[in-house]
Length: 308
Ligand SMILES: [Fe+2]
Ligand SMILES: [Fe+2]
Image (tube, rainbow, N blue to C red; front, top):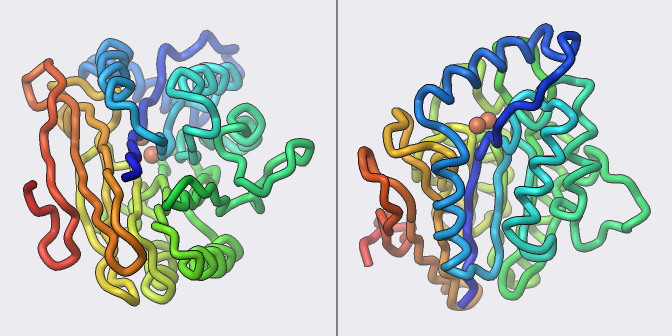
């Protein structure tokens, strides 16, 4: 059995002191947002106990689906790198960027440079810098293949949307076909939810095109963040429905209106054509400050999450 943990959107604080010139424009509005969010019980006090609980579960691998930082100020990426290192060594922790990790155009390179050990594919060469063409990357671990997709594109003020892009979708299609032939349990990591409806300003612009790729070549599990809510959706795949699971922000407190902080554990067993994927959601519940298992079941394409 392989145990995979999934967390997302820690939005690590505090925001470092910045030069005034750095917080003009889009970053100014992000800063105001962050100050407001802190007031709603959001931060390190809730993240640290949750991560201690995660460590105690000793997963084989940890998947982090983006929004580690807030304004994409350069020093925030060092905080992000330290957080990733606190979870485990780069071969056991995989990250993809979210929209806050590519908040402004000038910051696009930081996550690629400073988080490289955690988002470099198995085939990447240590001396070759990562760029947008490095996505999707693949990391094979035991029976599973982690496929990291980037939706991080710089957007205008008030926009939190994302895009996979045609070139990356083409590479994704080829890669997922190849991994299927290898008989691996394919886990696609993507920050923006590829299912469900939301306002255009925070949507995945080419969600329909992404779903079309999965309809054609399939995957076994899709993990996302961005909504800061627990969610379970489905994409019709060639061999049955593919579960698409969203997790609340790992830094959200028990009073957070979008959902208390959680992470999910997946216990994956079985074999190609007969995979068994058990899911356990652990964390806070509304008004409850203790960390406990909150939901547990087997992901069944016929019946959703079946309590187990
Ligand atoms: Fe987020
Ligand atoms: Fe996001």
